[in-house]
Length: 326
Image 1 (spheres, rainbow, N blue to C red):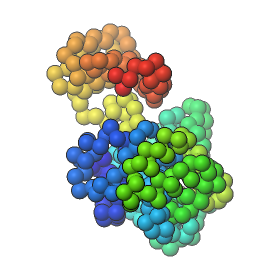
Image 2 (image 1 turned 120 degrees about the vertical axis):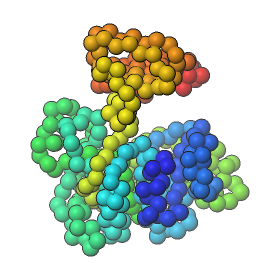
Image 3 (image 1 turned 45 degrees about the horizontal axis):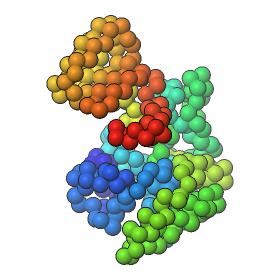
């Protein structure tokens, strides 16, 4: 979160609104002590990116309807920062022409873990020489389809970065998710008043749960309102334990990356990653691409190929009422 803030600050100054869960307030404020209370939006429960980004857009719209906003997740590793900032500046120039703009990542391999963006014709926009129209957003593909996307050169990874006029974002949100739009506007209109907490706590639990891609980006692309800036920087999404293994500089024990102070790991003919904050001995014998996450009250065992499915375990535990380990 600190790195995300720091690479945006040269462009935005202190005009940053942060959306996170109430459970993360202490950690976020510890990382970003300069963040004003009015610019910290705390979700009482997760409602996916449609509500999170939509509420930010609604708050900014009530403050200044001419605002161009950018939304950037805090779980991404990006370098060099200069090239990232150049892409964001191009996105701002493009958004000013009345577009929702996404920053597309050049694929380095045929990933099945990311969504893709199909690039269209080049756009003639001053200050944004690399801007293209977006023909289509596509879901996470099969391995064979991902290979086709990579070979065609017409597809970029969807990193979930958006730059857009807040009025245009809200217009598409209202057209596609009117209940969500109206609830968010009710919260936003009370945000800078003494009724903020009461209205948020009353309305937020009633909001539908939907990703911003489905609520805004995909229908906006169908309407011809989405453009893309192709990225010229290194990018990775820290979205699962396979990514943590890929990015971590932690030591390896016979082809198994081990993260955890004082970890006691034995390996034989195995590969993968172990993340532990216990002193329990973990022995891996004859197992490939394993992911082991060991904590005092829970143990996760999966594979790198299935590491993006951990959310299903979380949902299952919630359904069983096992909230103490989440």
